[in-house]
Length: 363
Image (tube, rainbow, N blue to C red; front, side):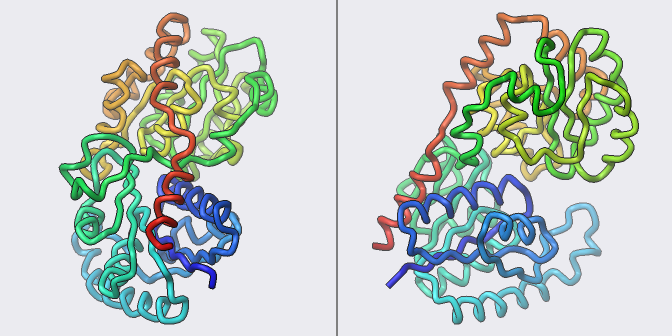
């Protein structure tokens, strides 16, 4: 009889892409496995998971709103409703195991699974664990983490260091620099800066680039600029007519973008960090300052302390980011050091490691 596995979570690409990578690895190891995703209605997983070829059910749930306490009035009701929804899903699907990857839907799904003694597994991508995962970790079978030092959050005997699962298109990319640059219609003889701020964009990065947009041409640089969806049109208009700038709201073919880049500007979400290490490109991180427990700064500093990346605080990005990137573009020696040290931290088979551990536990 084929195994049935639920994967719960989402909200951001940093949760969704690892979840898909784990699902794909499970299917490679055992093609008969039936996988169902559970996400939060209205979140990006409801679109991205079906695109990857998997079924998903959405819960009526939202997270705690830190900026407006009044918006949390309905939260207990939504949480209670989500538990009833989860019970109905479990009664229908009858999973053999449940995997949580982070995001609103993880807590009610794993909590219910644990109450029914169904094996549960957690993937914690960040170097600072979220509160829900810490609570769930006490009764989880195994907790897969990106790196060392997670004993402060989880029972030591349950921790398995696997690294973060990244998309196969990136992990196994054979795209050359010239192929990548040509894909974006840019000049193969110029140094290329890749700026990515996540699917919704990064205000500080976008404003820094916009305020110093002429500096790129003055320094013979070209820019691949993912603005995010929120204020895309404004920046698209600004980049119009500039042959050295490719600008769009979202980059689907990230393997092309990483191949094209000589230097990367990025937020410091766990998945961005994992992908950049595999791409092995000199990077300037601008951590999102409002991330829970400031985990993006912790993620970035892990690389900075090993001379594998540079970092600019969000509050200083508008003034300093572009000048730091330009200086780095002229320093070949520093680029080589950052690239080499970054590559030494790369993990390309985390998805397979996680899938094998899960299957071994539910044999």
